[in-house]
Length: 440
Image 1 (cartoon, helix red, strand yellow):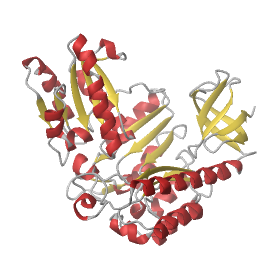
Image 2 (cartoon, one colour):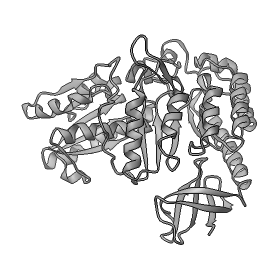
Image 3 (tube, one colour):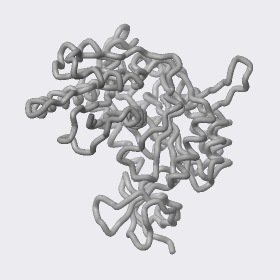
Image 4 (cartoon, one colour):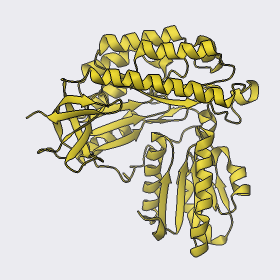
């Protein structure tokens, strides 16, 4: 069967789609690049916000026109399939099957039964599935950067978040399989790997009841040692688990990227407690200070939610104050979206008017734009090692790449080619991009 994969949401979803492709190719199916060639469309979904789910629903309904032209099966995979299994099967009549994040091994069997006309669901969560034995098929990448999923699930139970309910409890892959996957990627010519998990800092592998545990700092040390020519990144860190030991490992290895994504979500302690984040603003700022102490050149990025339940104007201003204190290089900024079945949906009132949420979000976005521009202006004149990723969208005569701080640099092509490391001097900037020139 010809299969077409569409992926929405986070990096973990894209990594999962590569696992799905591997499972299905091994079963004899083909992954096609054009929707028109497909006999089945697999939509890998996100449930973190309502607009993500609505986008998928619109897409499912758009595909009805293709189904009217020829036989086309639609399967919904991932977090949304897990959360809305019954609703999808009832309300979206053109969906043939739904499969949750822990049931991808069942896809070949499900596809073999499609001609029976029976709609199918496989959404059981697992306590041990990590897909560690599956070599992902790299889909549509640049052949330079790749994701490695090191763990699955989450048990932090932030009050606003559906992830523990859609991806189950935390479980980690063995370090041997992770390191071997990194080695194989390097052998294939990849120059950068990103280790993925809902909370990578809580990675922990123990080989049997009496075995020695491998922690995330130790895993980072092992992966970074594969080759000094391969960059190593990771996402995402939880502030409560960011240890000095990890920062020391990062400081020892030049090929570990100097960038930490450290979601704060709010700059007010009362709101953080309501969010069940398990840290205070003071703890968070201590972790920021530790990052600066070990790696003064490290960039810090974050996530933030505007207008969480009962948030006051003063508490919103605390978030703005924190942004100024930290000086983030980038932020993912959203207004609060109530997710059914979470603690917040059951026990807290979503009582901040939407227009207030929108205005607070706009204030955060405007402030972050100013901070990012100020940060980038300080980069002018500096020289960075850049991993070239491809041609700039603005001009075929320019290339783009990223430095160790995960900042995008655009520069004239010269003799550089994608996949190479080059030295680039920063000559200008916008809030989002550094502009530069090759240093010969």
